[in-house]
Amino acid sequence: MNIVLGGSGTMSSVDLVKVINEVRAEEGKAPLEHADFVKKIKAHPSIDAGKFSGIYVDSANRDQVCYHLPRRECDLMVMSDSRPVQAKVYDRIAALEAGRADPFAMLPPEQRALVQLMCDNVQIKARQAEIEAKQNEQQESIKRIEAKQSAFENGHSFFTAMGFCGLRDIKLSMRDMQRLGRRAGAISRKRGVPIDRVRDARYGMVNSYHEETLAQALNEIHGGM
Image 1: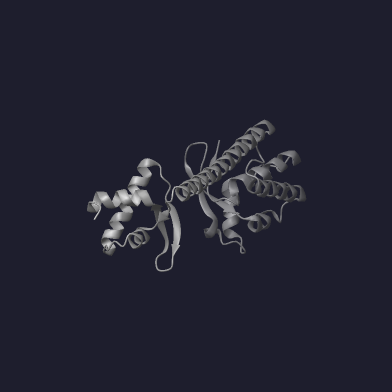
Image 2: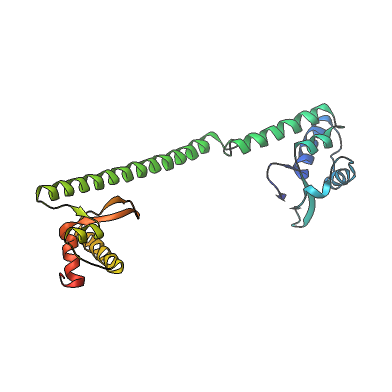
């Protein structure tokens, strides 16, 4: 069996010869040799053969020259052939183009059904993952709201590192406030305490932490100051 190597969206000269010979056999004519067809391609004045050249491995496992022709060049090469040849080439090209539009078009019905089922499963799983992600996001939002409500009821709230220092009239350098925020974040993640995001006029969106978490972080890095 010949193995054709070349571009997609084209029909190989090997396949063209096969189609032509199928019709010739029906008409009782001698088969066309691929080597002779290749010579015609090279000699055609309206085909730049070099743009479409490729190779195929013949039945003797030898590399041979072939051409991968787009629709226009295929039509040119069979223009002088009989109408049955032209019709069959046209139908074959149409089938190839349909196969590119639907890569499973040439599969048997049972295989198409299996591939379709696999594709549907992938889409379902992707949708499920999207729903789960949204649900997790909603759950985290609910947790933050509940934590804020609990903090409000207990007289506490959430603050940025800078806001916390301002509330307690603590003077820290920017570097130390960054350390405070990092430590508060580590404590929050370890204990499962939510970390909120608030908009700051100077720095954009910044993290805010529970007041008690910030107090503990401050105590750990500065001994309570």
